[in-house]
Length: 423
Image 1 (cartoon, rainbow, N blue to C red):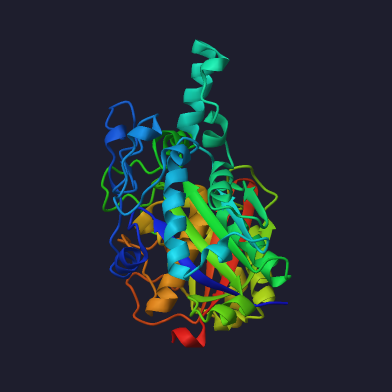
Image 2 (cartoon, rainbow, N blue to C red):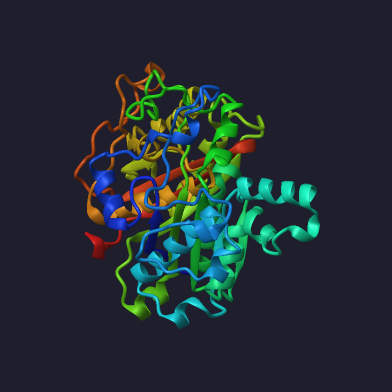
């Protein structure tokens, strides 16, 4: 059974489009939430979002898109992508460079890719409408692969010539954590030497605004306080998009290439609530089981965990449910790990969230800090007994857990362990 290490990262996010920017903003708790111009209409009650900066992907024609000059994306590649396809392509280039991978490391039968996204609703709506109004033969032949769920892995596997295992995950906000967990299994069981894990979302009107109908989005118009997990005044999440790519490799590959990993991916666990299609179990039972299974897989005791990057999205019900799950697992041993939600800075990335926040944890472990939970004026009394970090702590966490939860009560916990060479 091979150990698994995280060796490369790529970020296109609301708080930075590269690892140094992300690390700096995480450490100093700088958020990426803005008053979002597409929500300016008075009929729209939501006013803020956390969009990616430096990219303009509003046009339905990808040839009109603009993006940072450091990237060059050929026209024939763009034609099969939605906005998050472009984000993930750029993040993939970053991750490959960060990990120091050669072309032969990327394209071989022992390197695979698992992806997670909800597709591109805006493009899908456009193509379906065009089919009905202008006729099926007037539609783009690449419209399907550019817009449906799975487009992120379709494109990356083809364009980067991935020959190993590839598939996509659709468990809503737990999707890219599931991708990371199953990628861990592929390497740990010796099926693959290396896996790319990709989480990505468009983060535009069509991917964010439908959640207003669920009463899940914050109606707070102030970018500085709208996303505030654990605060007693929280009223919903702030939407975001972008992409994160993680490079996971076997112990043998790390040794062969002589690379210094960010951290070890030590184990994971998953469980379902079996409760409600859209709302977490009020006692956090599924997440508690996922946490217990993750700790068992990683051979880690609750008292050894230094930090939990909570799923906490800033919704009234979800944050309290997660708090109960953490109590169930950690209170019996007297453990009090530090807890924060980086969604206070980025907003909630939906399918992107798990990969993005795992990347944030890896950065913090390498850089030697534990990010705080921003924008808290007063902690919800129902969570006040937890060790919620309101400021960044300049200490490297040795064992970290990243939680994710999705629709249908899907729960995933990933365990990361610091490596001696990063100390």
